[in-house]
Amino acid sequence: LSKMQIFFRYGLGNTRSLEVDPTMSVKELRHIISEFSGISIDSQCISYGFGILDEFETLEQAGISDYSTLYVSEAMLGGAKKKKKNFTKPKKIKHKKKKVKLAVLKYYKVDGDKVVKLRRECPAETCGAGVFMAQHFNRTSCGRCGLTYFPSKGDEGKN
Image 1 (cartoon, one colour):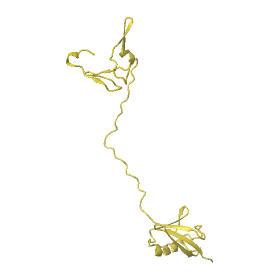
Image 2 (cartoon, rainbow, N blue to C red; image 1 turned 90 degrees about the vertical axis):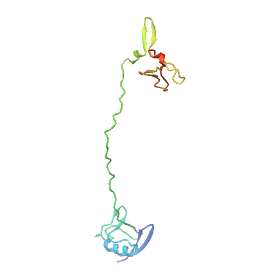
Image 3 (cartoon, rainbow, N blue to C red; image 1 turned 120 degrees about the vertical axis):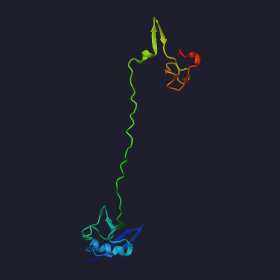
Image 4 (cartoon, rainbow, N blue to C red; image 1 turned 45 degrees about the horizontal axis):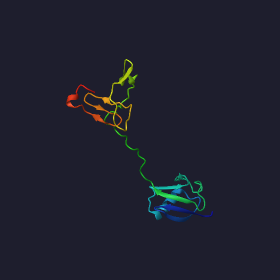
């Protein structure tokens, strides 16, 4: 039978060619590779195409033809999953906005034939008309621009 030439890539880009018999087993080939590459027989991983070669196959059975390139690498440990995170505190409960029906009635009051504003409008230029200030127990503040008024000592009962 005729011999065929095959190429081996190993290490960091090293390439070597060999004249081998097509009926040679992959196991015999591993012994030859270990001599020139320095990779031990047990840790060799020989791949061709998309698969890893089985030890008991011949080169012919594996589909290796003349001038084929085989890739030799060392078997590596790895593929372990990332450790699952252990949460120590319970999840934060997010604030749910409460929709108040007819909320406009808090801002205006009808006095006879006149409409009176119950809340103070924000005087800032960025807010403009129609933006009312929130009434807290110790201050009046705008939710849009953040402007806050604290009542002075004489204005305790007023808005």
